[in-house]
Image 1 (cartoon, rainbow, N blue to C red):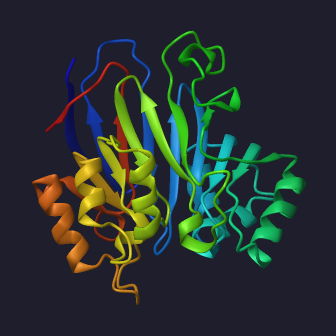
Image 2 (cartoon, helix red, strand yellow; image 1 turned 90 degrees about the vertical axis):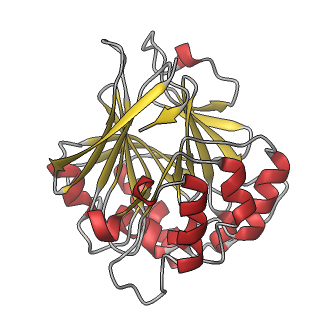
Length: 296
C-alpha cells in the first residue's frame, strides 16, 4: 500500500499541519516539532498517549505549549544529550501539572550541571530513569525493551503501534556532547521516522556503518542544520521524502547552513518538502500503519 501524504496549511496552534490519507479506524502517530527557537522539542502522540524527544531550552514556554495541547501526562521522555537547548525545558516541569512516567537518557559522558539537574527533576516527578543504548527499543505503554519487541506488546493496545528503535549510541562507545545524541528510528507499519538530535558527521558515518540500509520517510535534520552534520552521504542513504529542522529565527550560529539546505533540496527533490520552525512555527506530521512510499 502506498503512503499518500497531503500537506495542509492549517491553524494548529499557529503552526502547520501535515496530514495523510488513511483507512478508517487506523490509529496515526502524530509528531509535532514545537517551535522553541534555537533548540529541539518533539511531541509524539499515539492512541491518546504522549511522549517527548528532547524538551527544548528553558524559558521558552515548552511546558505551556504542552498544557495548551491538553498534555498532562507523558508516557516517556527521551533526552538525546546534555545540552541546554535540548534539556532545559525539562527542568521547568515540577509544579506545572505535567506528569512524566519514564525518563530515558543516553550515556553522554559530558554530564554537567544540566545533567545533574535533570536527574533531580526526574526524582521530584517520581519518574523512573533508565539509560538506553543501541539494540533496545521504546514503545508507548510498555516502556523499554528489546528491539525485536512485537507490535502487539505496545501497551496491550491490540493494534499496530509505533516502536522506537535505539540506533545510537552503542554499549561499547564512550562519547560526549553532540556525538552522544540518542538516535531513534520510529517504525509504524512500514513507515519510518528518524530522530537524530545533534548527531555530528562522525556519528553519522558510524551510524551508517552499523545500518547500511538505513532509510526513513521523515527526517529530523541533525544539529539544527549545522554544516558539521548532515553529510551528503548520510542524507542520500536515509533518502527522506520530507524533513524538518528546528531552529531559532536569526540565530547567531548561521543555522541552517546554506550548504546543508542545498544538500537537502537535492535529496528531497523539492524545497517545499523541507520544513523550518523559524519560518513556519510548530509543524505537525501524521503517520499511519500500513503505509510505505511517501508521495505528495
